[in-house]
Picture 1 (spheres, rainbow, N blue to C red):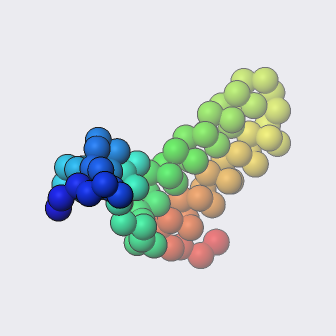
Picture 2: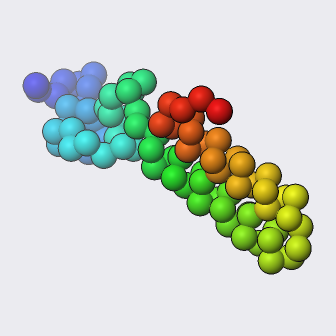
Amino acid sequence: MQATKFCEFGPGDSATWPPFAGHPHDPRAPIGSDEDFTLDTINDARGFLAIAEVAAKKGDIGKARYALSEACKSIRELIGEDQ
């Protein structure tokens, strides 16, 4: 490509970008629906387990059981088990 008086290529132009390297924040990253939600589910379960731990330490057993059931539900949804 050659620069013309109407278009000069510089560091911000797509013509001068390096090849796509797979970085998720690159605007050229493909958008797909085949994402793996395993890590998100693990993080959700960790959050619910942390809530359950704090609630149990404070003596709120009802809240602890609810948080544990939410963690269990998240994991079951991931692996495809019916409740």
